[in-house]
Length: 129
Length: 285
Image 1 (tube, rainbow over the protein chains, first blue to last red):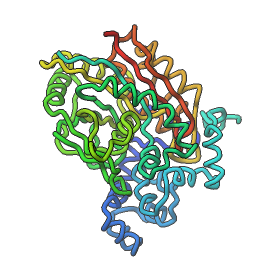
Image 2: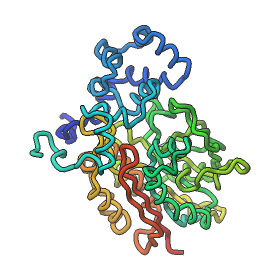
Image 3: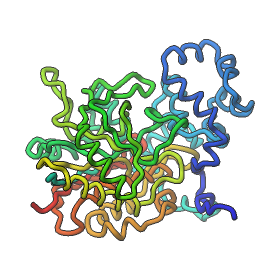
Image 4: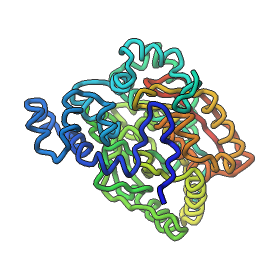
């Protein structure tokens, strides 16, 4: 019997469940390795070679090289792990979150100051705004 | 016997720590956040407990995907601030309370909650930001937090996370454990995380003020009813990271159900990507 996953119909949201975690194990552990300063230096001096040390899929490696966090998440990444890439690049959490929304950094920041993204129209996929 | 005298609830946004550590706390953006904690710092100065039982979550710092404990109790003598990728926060190390922690672990496990006992662990912003908000920055000549802290880490990163109901009942088991401790200690329990926020995907930046204020109302007046709320309501209404709010129910479960004093209540949007909520509840003496 399939497990009940009622969160699949929330728009723009990927829940990091056991299935995603299994898919993203090596991607996330690669991110974790960037908590060590010597690893950050090695990664920055040769990203592709560093990624090739990890048993990640080619799609995962490409998503990291492109810094496409939505693609990383689709391939099992979790935001708290992916944040280590952002820290390596000197990005704030707000810059990282904003980069996934298709908005400019300024527009995202202004939206937050104005009270954030409204829940209205954002509960279900296909809902009328 | 020990006694739980009060509980504190607060968001634990990492950018709040960064604002304090980088000396930005007087900027108007951050003043609006810190103004909500002026009362709280004074209150904690007057009501310093013998120890704080601090419920928080680790954000892929102490725990990678190698091991994911649902409930982990810190039983060590001390805990160092974690290096989360920007270097450790310049805050004091956390002094634990190994005797009380071991007692609570023993009692709560016998009450059917399977805690993981942790004897070595760094603590991240989830634990140190609430301490900074409530205590302020400790002065150089007395660089220490005001009392020992027992870190209690809850998995809210990988689904499924524990249910609100389970968290609420765990709080009751923690209270029973504290009350069976031999020494007459005055203990506070803090629940941290939330409020509404989403840090991932095209829906990032979600804030739901109606949900948040309703959550605060019900946490005060109807915790048992609130504990029945399913996960899906948290993630749909309060964002994928809003699920952290289940941790507040652990602290609330350790308090009296009724007759509480609401010492302080605060709500503000935004701190970085997040809605900031804060409550102080006191048990009747």
